[in-house]
Image 1 (tube, one colour):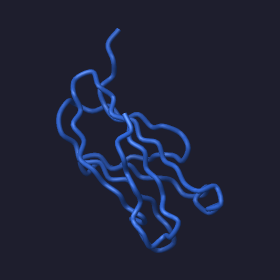
Image 2 (cartoon, helix red, strand yellow; image 1 turned 90 degrees about the vertical axis):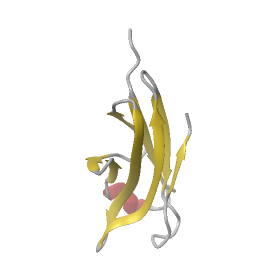
Image 3 (tube, one colour; image 1 turned 90 degrees about the horizontal axis):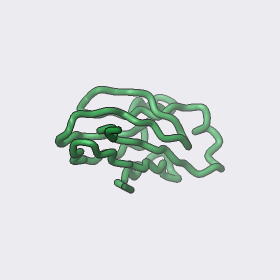
Length: 100
């Protein structure tokens, strides 16, 4: 059985930020936007190589609120795990880290 190649993105926020339960994450890989979710992992299949990943969400009148991005190297058969954390203030940037 072969391992899938791609990234897995998990979105997190402070449970006291109740309004974030009503917005969806957007995971953008190499300029292609896909929907994500809070508190659950989203697997995105990719080809091996270098990929630019941005995560953000729409909030009030701002299309790309709390955006965070990174470049990841994906090897054949590898799943890179990323974690996005929303900031406490909606005027700050989010944090996107490679966790595995």
